[in-house]
Length: 113
Length: 113
Image (cartoon, rainbow over all chains, first blue to last red; front, side, top):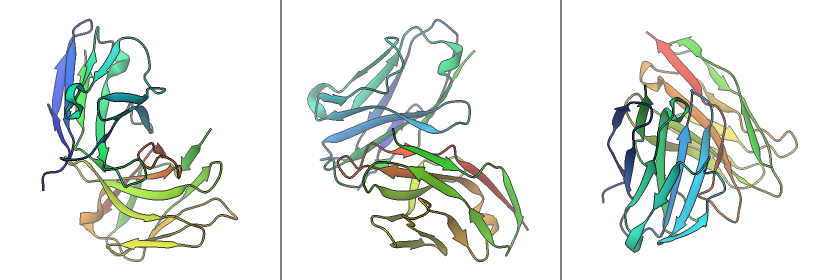
């Protein structure tokens, strides 16, 4: 069974540009989570989808970040326009239910220059 | 809110040395506690977990015991190997949403032959 897959693995963009990160959860997992680790600090929760609905987006830093999960399958996280402080590693995780263990992807390393 | 405080790194050890990485937490109720590991170039992997007080999680020679009286979940290994070099994250999740984790800053371990 395939695990959580994230694309791209690395992205380098200039300040002011737009970047879209993608996460493919484990098949059948209704719950999808986005996290990020900035500047080598702690991994912080961004938001939680249950199927296509945003269950909790309390961790989204500002309105430059837009997450979608159309159809309740894969999810995208768009940063527009990107700022230098957005550099970091963005992780996605999925779980079958909210009480079940979440499985993480390998992360996308975003560098804004 | 919930928080996790993790021993600062980086930590450098010689092969076969004893490892301890301290982790303490603040949370309401009775969270589940986890250690995740990120090997170079890979995603986050669950290393071990404990879901209630006095539980001991163990995997690959690593152990951690859920200590409610000291709100701690220290990671230990009796004899580290070069292949254990990685970043280790302590985390907690509330009972109500196992996917919404709170992480520590991570501790980078380097084991030298």
